[in-house]
Image (cartoon, rainbow, N blue to C red; front, side, top):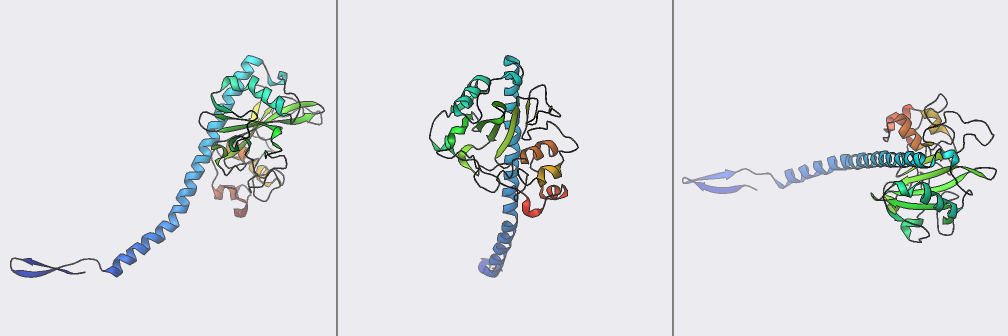
Length: 278
């Protein structure tokens, strides 16, 4: 709207934006925001996932190293029976809790933060998921920074439980509670042989703390990004089976410096845009 101002006896018109010009400017700002805000939010989430994965890995690596120093090689540790909640609780009380500052040990608590389920990357519950009535397979505690640590004793060779699977969830029960996203998977191996009796390759003799793969400790010719993505059982892709996303942890740590890889990098490794899990 034009305004009139008296100045030295003369009438002058002051220029201003018209209503149409203001509306057009606001429309342009809205379009730019609609295009950029989702990307900004997603980038922030990727940063959170990367930071959470690195922090959890660092904390638990230090815990295992300290426990090995006090108790000896993990091959001598007493794990008990596969899938038994009593043995899982005894394990963390003896080998884990003395070496880390925790905020809460769930024990047999039935609160939501203690029994929430872990899902695959598509949000589907694992067939052995930690839901009410099936939570006895797990032991869980919370670190001081709010990270939930869940332990599962499994991988039996006969009656010998030879590995401990642990799941770190950097934002606890709040969600989305998906493997490869806020939930990262690791393995403490306590047996130097695989189920067929053969000696494991690339076995980490120092700490026995490794990533999710049950028989590989470091990069090798057969554990490639394509391999970690393409597996139809635990692969880092949405179209994998019930354990979809379990190997996303390995992909991030082994080939992306602990960070969420970009969609283009994922495609370069052999994945598809539709299968990109982040």
